Image (tube, rainbow, N blue to C red; front, top):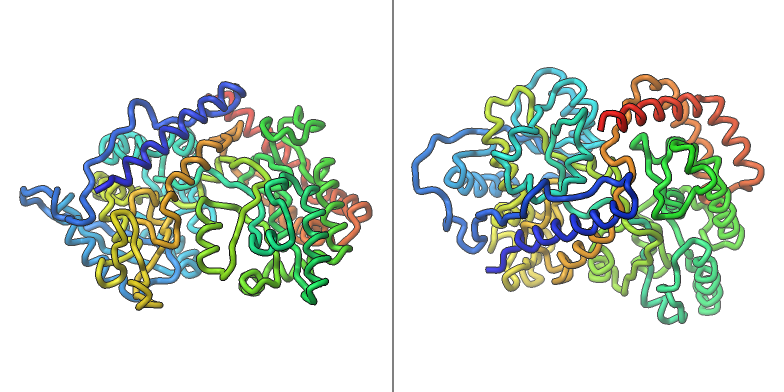
Length: 533
């Protein structure tokens, strides 16, 4: 059977080579690599014969407690974990005590469990739940820097060095990041059937300014057909896509940005190192552009509330009442949406993918600093990232019960259209680790890994990758600035107010609430980070 992991290893190597070229163009970039040496293919179990490679030697079984955040908690979770344990007991002498909690509850419960000293071996952590940096700072997670090359060697080699650098804290690694797409890429998903019918060349769209003519055409031609099609939504997420920058606080909305030379933005402030992006010419231009869209009626009646109602947005997009919306794109998204929306879907990128420190913080598996079995825990995490049987089982469940195989490399969760709810399905399943060691659901194109390879090859590594900002010295200012931005930015960034009048008020409020103090603290910490290299 074709080894998916081998193709994924090639992906990582290709990303390494490209990042090296990028770094050659810009000496401040961190070069992505596989951690040194040639990428090796691990000895993974064959999904068609999971007992093909486990050790025949009887061994002591170690139980690992794994807290996981996932949504929703599938009905057949216990049955799948039983199947997983059958395999891992023989493969590495491990069985999992799986404590899965739905995402909203996990965000509250897991920090409480950690603070109460609850024993566990592995837990999910990120920058949006059970905060990775916060709990590293509390010594809740184990330093695995020295253990990784020995007990999770294949994973360690497979994940690019840029990602390991991004999750380091004071030079040490405390979690295994989920390696999928490298960074984030902003752009627009759009109804490609409508675009073709209206004679639109979406390949010509490379900036927001280009999109004005597209929206004008959609408005005019849809009205001529007796329709009232909203041209675009999602503008509350669009500003960093229009003029990409590196977020130096890890929170892109906070006023502390760094220029990324490859994007050729912020030339007038780039020499400051750290700057307030809201004072830039680029921000004024963005707000003026979307102000024009709003006044022309391209955004619907209430773009701020419309943006927040994603269920309504998705329904309108599928029904042809919405032409496009801004999105942080991942490979295969357009193809997957085409299969479910009832019409063709295309993607118009506004930027190359950008990999920043925060890009690696979206999901990690960390070991408790109190774990009594760190070696076995890392062996298990290694299986999650490299073993095709495990990768497929944990995402798609049990063959013949939750899915049917389609060829060698795909699965059908509907079992030929006979199921709508199969009891267990985490189609992409990025929270479990890299998706490259699975059989992919047929909703993804057969060349999905090639799409990931192309995406990752084009990723730009941010100049200050690996820098993590400690907010503690400016907690008061961060809280005040967060409230200020929430008050002003949505109206500005959806064109709901006149930027000529409103931006000066916004900047005055930012300054009054500590913007300069935040930027000064970021500069101080960034200087120390660079001096320590």
